[in-house]
Image (tube, rainbow, N blue to C red; front, side):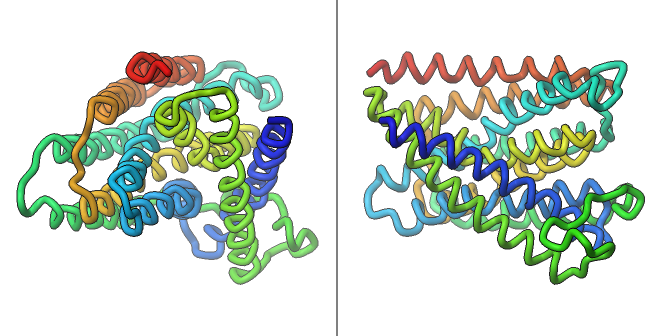
Length: 334
């Protein structure tokens, strides 16, 4: 257990350190590609940080030899959006509260494009509702509907780039970490830093998830508790770390765009893989996670639609994850 806890904290630190390099590199990559700030978060950053958990789903549903292994992939496809819609948004609110004085803010207001974020919540909810509905029915052509989810993500990326807002050139960026003396690093250097950071994030995340499972086993927690509650939190840790870093820099727009973009990826790509390669049938816990995720998104849509969001309100959405944890603990008491 001592070794597991040591590796747990070391890997968490490695993820945070790697995310420092990732967010710095991805901002420069967005500048070199002439992308707007929101598209940097919702497309580039989200796609990069979503790769590890998407790989978990792909491996489980495509190469899994048992129903239990395939169920793990389906659980990952449902657990990711739940964690992002509750804990990740709450982290943004918490980070704003901690850094308010450091950022010389007089209030806890979240400075973002509220209209755009409310629209993103509505789009995600529409896709997510179809995803959950398909988990409740069975029919012959259901596997073919996975194509629609891939198309939905393509439309989302096209829209984000088309409607991209403030160009990153208008913001002062920290020097590229691997080339700190270069005033305007090239696309190749920015891309190299992003790739190296993603490799480090993937390795550290793999170690983190393994130690989390080892700790759960050592504490005699049910494997279902670990799989449904802890593993999704671990796989979404890069997005959470990115949010902490960007909010600390006063860039909550990028933090929330990263979370929103990652949610759309989780609602489409892993879902398409699950629909292609599994029966995509939900049990009670998966349905509960879907309902609670939908409630969280409705809440977020409502507060962003009002046009003014307090960081302390975002912190409150984490209570819905607590509700899910209680339901799972009651369903799997041992």
